[in-house]
Image (tube, rainbow over all chains, first blue to last red; front, side):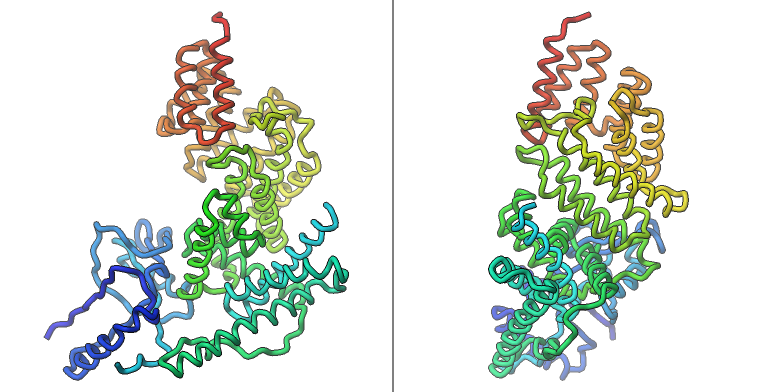
Length: 124
Length: 421
């Protein structure tokens, strides 16, 4: 068996609890239920909008100058290579870990908060 | 200051302190800002009629807090209703119940709250535009319309920028805290850069038809003063305040009666604000004392400004010292504009031919009207009048503001009318 990451992309930046977005929650629940029942789902999270992202680059290797940019990573040249899920007290702590990920000097690391639902979405 | 202006100033300064504390208490910047603004408006409405309360800060704190908790309670109620209908947000669990807290915090707590606010508004994960907007709105207490005017953007654009910035602070959990001592060296330059940027925008507006935007210049100075009050031991903070005092002191001489630019060599130095220069010198001395022998970029710039501020006239300026300071500044910041200013100083020290050589070494600035104008001036002094005219014509197409273009037009007329030797 092999592991895969399925990365979800959207035409527009959105909050998951936005009224227009809620209509799709049932579909997501349906997918989640099916994938869980089949035993294939290893994890997954909803993210805050791309506007909450911070992109980090470390110049000249580990311990080099840290450069932060407000917003998501949007250059077409580099490609997505993987992801880590980091639990931290606040953005500063998350960024301190992010700057140690080798991708931060080989490319870039986008740090995006995970969206927390207050309760499970209602069943459709 | 009129009594009304003094009252407004009190409300603004106390409002800032109240806001910093309220954000810590309720953890919601937007709600806190609206509440403090409402309280400030209530103060401006009722104080002239009823008299200023004995403790303006306590009055504003109580009023703002009441308003903030009203909003939070309403939001919580709505969230509960939504949760009953479907599923809600976190509002109910996140917001604390109203509690009785002593209305006025000790000064040390106030300082700490203000520092928190400074470092949150100038957090490097926010765009520089957002940092500037938040600093002017939240730290300086300017209203959105005024900030929008200052940066020549529609008010709606500025509102959106602020909303987005506050939302990012909340969503990404940008912390509301003072960086630890070990983090300060990497965070402080960012804060100083925001204030410096506001000052530069004031000193050399990037567009528009006025020479100086007095509002932004005094806001930058106010912010620098605030930083100095909060961090009196930081050498670069004192240096930035010194720099802004020196440059601000020249303001009365920088524009003539027609609203035209008067450059440093031609300024009437008797118009300079001597008190501001004296204060600048004192802050620069503070910076030198605290820097432990290593001058940072703001200290070097403050020394440069001091050279001009203390010279009796352009011709009496210590150009050798100025060139040395520019060399030091270039060694810490690779800024082409610094190199441009250095070239002009070289010209004053060693003559126009040397200046031209120095300018041609930084030809990457050829799209800058300042570089063109400096080159034109060197060429004029070398009697290469046709070349000087051509440079001035190019400079006019590159100049960003109307007063700049008028100045270049006057220069061009002088070069054309000058009889050949």
